[in-house]
Length: 130
Image 1 (cartoon, rainbow, N blue to C red):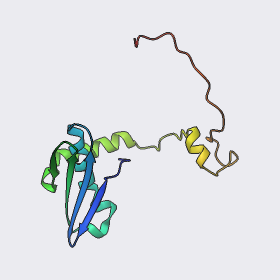
Image 2: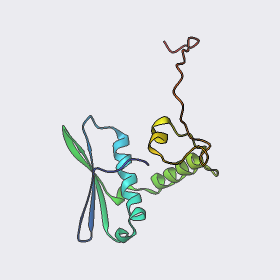
Image 3: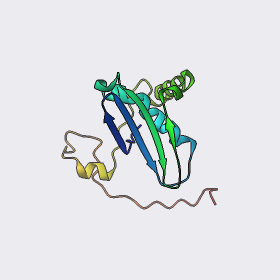
Image 4: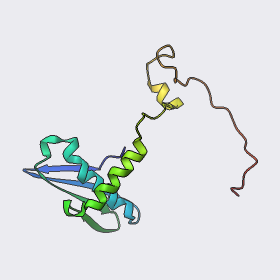
């Protein structure tokens, strides 16, 4: 759920979430906007009583509308199960990379996971990928 919609437009008591896509239509585009529609009222409590809908816009195709009617009990249940499975009962291990650590001003004395080293070149020859 780290993504963000491209546009959130608010007029009076109506919110439209627009996510623009440049490629072909995929089922997960619809599901992504369904998650935005479902979660927006939680992320923005001031809008919880507003009508919220979504639109998936394609560069070369018709837009696809997402309404609260698309948020079935099954979808909500599967999303809840997925979040619980991915989230688990314990926080994930911290594994920052060089990019994150370059941007961070917390030193190694305060962050044992800090990554300051270079990247070692690794050659793997024992595999069946190709």
